Figure 1 (tube, rainbow, N blue to C red):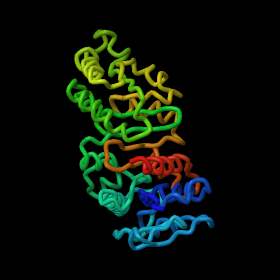
Figure 2 (cartoon, helix red, strand yellow; figure 1 turned 135 degrees about the vertical axis):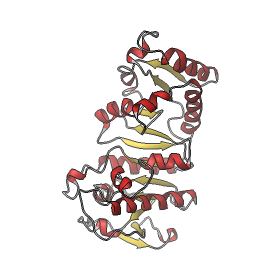
Figure 3 (spheres, rainbow, N blue to C red; figure 1 turned 120 degrees about the vertical axis):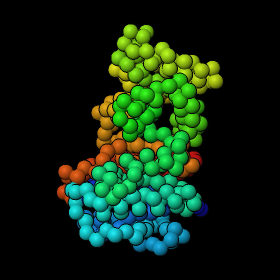
Figure 4 (cartoon, rainbow, N blue to C red; figure 1 turned 180 degrees about the vertical axis):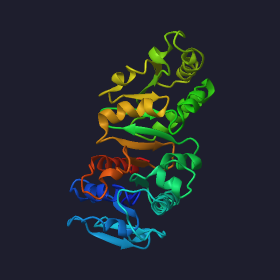
Length: 324
């Protein structure tokens, strides 16, 4: 029997990534006999923590050596010599990017079937001179139709724009761009368990513009795009007032909110699902999941990190690996 190979990058070595990975994978219901998990990183980052006794970690040289009987570790060559928990650094930025870059290449080569990414520090990447502001931005560079989304049992949110200044995000509220996004999203969801969901589009302005009295983007750009998408057969409606649209999708498994900019979608999602939510990148030829939180430098190295979002990310990556 062939088992899917799931790559897990350890994230910023100075953050909580290694800790939450070890905690999540040490749970008996997280590692199953139906997958090969391969960690990408520098082993010295794991040595900062007590490795759970029920985790057998085996260093491998290639993917053929990976086994579902243990946890495989693939050492990625970097200049990282010392781990400084709780602090961003150029060395950590270079290292965390190297782990991710290698995992993406291996996914493209079909050596692994999916990727789970522990949190990186955008500041560390900046110190290292890496021009992207995070995992999704790098993937967007490779796959321009990549889409950032957030999943939990209670709520599903898709971001039309993500890591952009708000004034730049507003400039992208254009009919043609929105319509292309709706079509791309529909195709991307077709590869997931959400393929039959109804899309609820959030408005941009208070009260979704109030028929043009509180802003015109709804009338001139958003509504025409939605109507055209409906004519093409997409299950989509809106725009709904931003302060109520998330209630329409809350605990409604068949509904997804399309938020027009980063904080519009992330604030309600993280308020409700911070500890169990998963960041999912759609529009890729392979699944990629991640916890919906950051490096938590303030508690790094203290053994206090909550692992549940990482655990859910691993479980979802496994599920998606079986249907992609």
